[in-house]
Image (cartoon, rainbow, N blue to C red; front, side, top):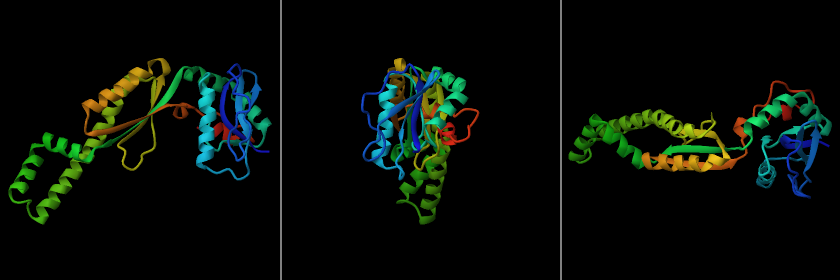
Length: 254
């Protein structure tokens, strides 16, 4: 039976609630595999595993429950091993590495911050800061909107100016929030977002981080800033220096 891995914790980590279910329909019981100073949170995997909403939520629920009691190295959804022994082999092979990462993540959570431009607000800001563009816009308005060519040219200039601000504003997001975090990790680019950054934040200073986000929103009203957290620290789990045979999915998961 293929083994599904939710995360890795210290062997002294508090146990999950009795009978806790994980992925699958019906839900597969979650169990703990211990080896030395480490423990892997696992269950059997259904043969037809797919990223369905039900299973994604179950994966997250296990990590949330486990993370409430101590640091957990979360595996990505779909992390599999051939069997339980393959998981134990990984725990043995990468014991030093996993224990170091658990120490580094203890008492910390991930907060993901995405930022985008508020279209009308950023246009107002660009015009207020660019006298040349403002003069062109005012001239067009005085001429009843200007000719088609004039409107097109102004539109192109405004688009270029907004794009130039994207890099500036992305840097401003990091500059405002990095002092409140232990680490930052840039996420994949997504349509509509000028910044997608995950921050590793101490749980006992999380209020300060959230306050910094609110301050950023007030100081940069042309930005639409969204924060998600606390989350398991997916973006800060180093997969390790090796991938033992039979358990590559476990070692490679991030």
